[in-house]
Image 1 (spheres, rainbow, N blue to C red):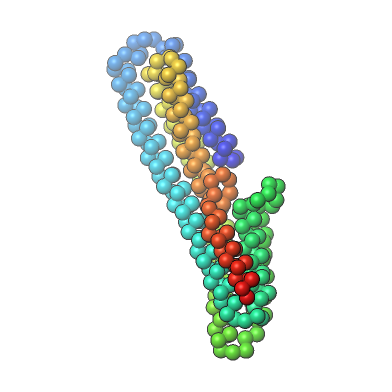
Image 2: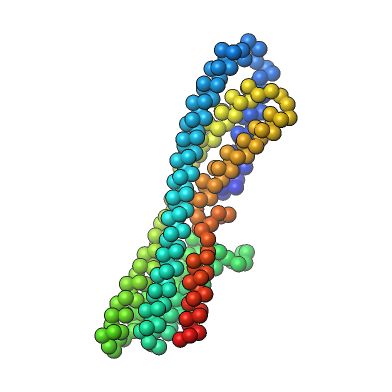
Length: 258
């Protein structure tokens, strides 16, 4: 189930809880909503609100950490790509095929995660099937250094290629993590019960309904951001493509220069 669907379900449940609370208020005997009962409702809703706020804060922090980690990994990969191209350029004209393969692999990776056209194969499934980096590593292994300098450059190129492949699989493995569905269900239950208590105490007028609706939308937006940032390479909220695009631009410029 996608994050958009879950957020819409959250809006319906949370706002539905508020409306249910308003409806129950008209059915309950008035003495059940006197000062003592209202205080009890406020204490219970305050405890639920504290738990919900704590869990939401932890989830937002965890999701932001996952997003930042992937963003940092992408930036490091872009820098490593430029370093590898520089090493291959210093190796000599014999390294032109793997350099061209590196440019193609970078362009293909950008198209996978930030596609310019809808309907093309994209996302982690396409990234897992891509083998451009493996082809480049095979081409680098076929290089036959003639001097000590070329041998050192070849070793550096192989090391950089191995690190890029490790980053590739690290991105794939990091993306496998997801929030436990039970955690989202429990959090949604807390928020629904919280707004039910708000509905019990709220007056039946347009202003109160609008405020409760805005509250439900805001909390559902927080859940949406949490789910989106937990998958930073897909969906609406993605890591920026700027580092990889800059790397590809430099690779093309260096290709023309050499």
